[in-house]
Image (cartoon, rainbow, N blue to C red; front, side, top):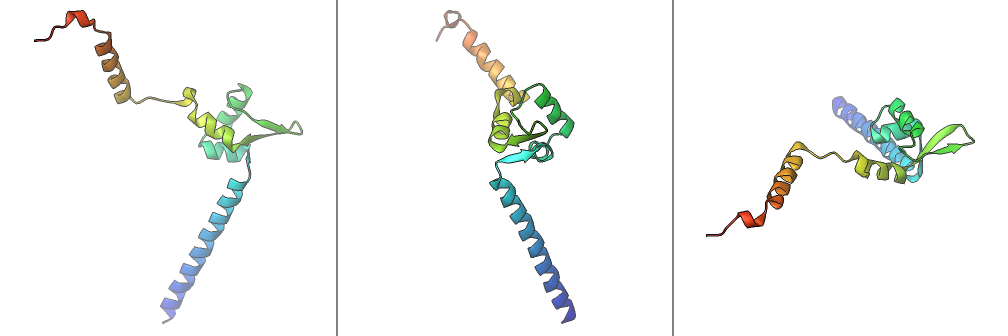
Length: 113
């Protein structure tokens, strides 16, 4: 009986930990701005890379009192989806190259039987 009670207590503690994580996640989602560290984590980039993007004006950011950089989540989402960040797979490029080659063939060189 004691082992069952221990298992139940462990289960309850795990549920509480998960609820805490959910609460933290919801609070972060409610805040429109992220700090440098939070934005780097959100983008899954090293902080140094994100600093580089800000110094090169590749990503929008805001300064509070001229000190810390903050990022709007909406801006980060746009950055992720921007054309500069779009990478085409090799299969997609090959398909596009074949399609372009077919389209570029002079139709007069082909005859139908």
